[in-house]
Length: 100
Image 1 (tube, one colour):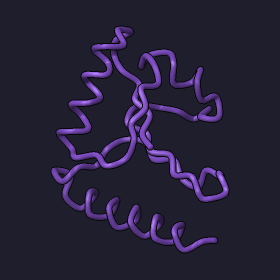
Image 2 (tube, rainbow, N blue to C red):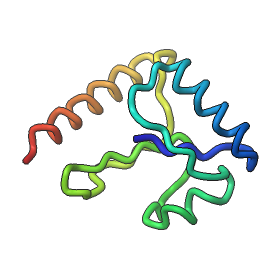
Image 3 (cartoon, rainbow, N blue to C red):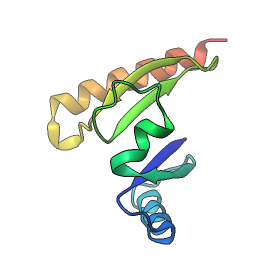
């Protein structure tokens, strides 16, 4: 699931923004409207004492243990960084899916 921290405190505007994001990137998993960007991330998830920036990806295993936190975005325009990130991400997810 994705947690969306938006740049506005207007819930309707935030819902519209999240809906557009889902459509633009064909996101197939739930996105939850979580709060206001500047202050709510650390308040709602104090476990992220190392939270640095958006986007942050938190990979949690089947037992609820945080297995990886990745901050930032390496898109296709970053060349080798994108390829490396995609391979590592896919490998980790495949390994976690095989765990019981």
